Amino acid sequence: MIAPGEDRPWLFCQLGAREHYILPRAFHRKGHLRALITDSWVRQGSLVSRIPGTIGHRFADRFSPDLADAPVHAFTGAGLVSEIGRRLRGGKADRWRIIMARNSWFERHAVARMKSAGLLAGAPRPIVFAYSYAALGILRAAKAAGCYTILGQIDPAIAEENIVAEAVAGHEALRPDWERAPAAYWARWMEECQIADRIVVNSEWARQGLLSAGCDGAKLAVVPLAYEGGQSETVRAYPDRFDDARPLRILFLGSLVIRKGIAELLDAAALLADHPVEFHFVGQEAISFPPAALANPRIVRHGPAARGDVAEHYAAADVFILPSLSDGFGLTQIEAQAYGLPVIASRHCGDVVRDEENGLILEEVSGAAIAAAIRHYLQDPAAVARHSRRASESLARFAPDAVAQQLIEAARV
Image (cartoon, rainbow, N blue to C red):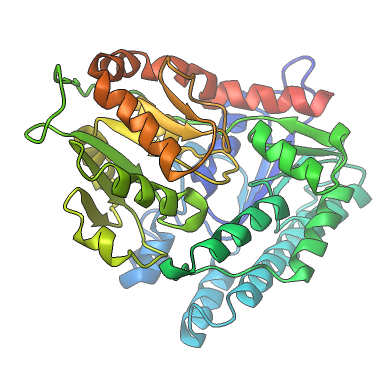
């Protein structure tokens, strides 16, 4: 039953398990979900769930008990065949061609299912939500059926690519694993933006990026990502002063790519080589660490972390850092705060950190600016403890039901 004033059901189309289906789950709890269309849906105990190796692991999380009784439409068999074929052809060969082909594959299957199952019919017509870059065919079909359409924009788009391109050119010595998307990719995205009735971005930073790309500002609405991890009960103890016996432990957790400000973070580590601070890098490396960084005993590389190991890294850290050059949001900020960590973050991501309240804001992303923020904590350990105590105060803003309500309000405007 749809609540008064919220008289339109929602149809979500998403390729992959983005945020583990957090929005469809929230809308299902509210009674607003007409259906979820996704590429794969693997119930526990099914044959696909028993496939060994990396392919089986990839499908292991493609289910949520919260949606066990929800109308979920998926193309698991076709997706499995496609995944096996991709791996046989080689995962990195012509990367962008593979990405675009997969996006188009999902759109075709989603449109066929929407039509065959009558998901766009009935009164009232559903609001159709699809994520950027795999939405064009879906939005076209929904508009033709008289539905209101929302594009969930996952990043600042081509504005972000331009930022990264400049950074990559400035850090060739790190041999970053990155290449521009083809023009056809951005042409399809621009058409998605033109067709959608509403474009939801996750941060003011992303909104500015889309405006700079020529998107219609009247269509844009800022709705943050949702977080449901809860609050850790980790008890944090900070010393009166940091020294070599008890250094300040800075954690970066995520993909080690140029876009995340890794080059600048390494610059900061070099500037602070004689200070009692350790830098812990956790994540898949898409750069080559320079010899000086490899020789720096204060830099600790942990490699990718399994999901079950992430909590240990947060618990061992004193401060979390996200010096991103550009992020649609940066969910690790909230995750770190849930573990009671102060966060040092750039302004080029979601609005999570309150400067000098639960962390520090970098006005610019540079080695010098990062080093200055860390020195602030080294010189005033009480600030670390104070910011830690307030770290989790903002979590309620990002609760799934609260974010779902913001999305409903955005559709009303």
